[in-house]
Length: 159
Image (cartoon, rainbow, N blue to C red; front, side, top):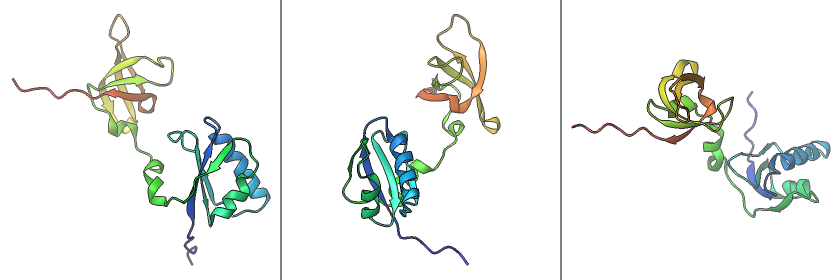
């Protein structure tokens, strides 16, 4: 027999900027200790200053966040799963990248350097890039997740 469908809503809570994970951890621990029915807690990197709580009603969230210094306020109303679904689906970075695109390297020894993609290896989730900030061109293979797209390659114009 399958689990019954929960009719829960998602309640956004405004927090101190940069303290989203602290709030999420604290409230989740408090809810477990007091046996409050908070089913999930979500602190997205893309949503600075907000934490989302999945619970059966607003009162459960109010009781769980009460008195914590990094909680600013609970946003009135609620969200549905469809409102945040696009943030939960992980997309492969390789699918977004093409040869000729300009990227910024966001991790590893070449962090903060810009590079041009010379080859995309989708099956390995890697890209071969040539650094733009160096005196000579040297191809480097890096994990695609270490890159951030800066500029798409311009399609070549027919002459």
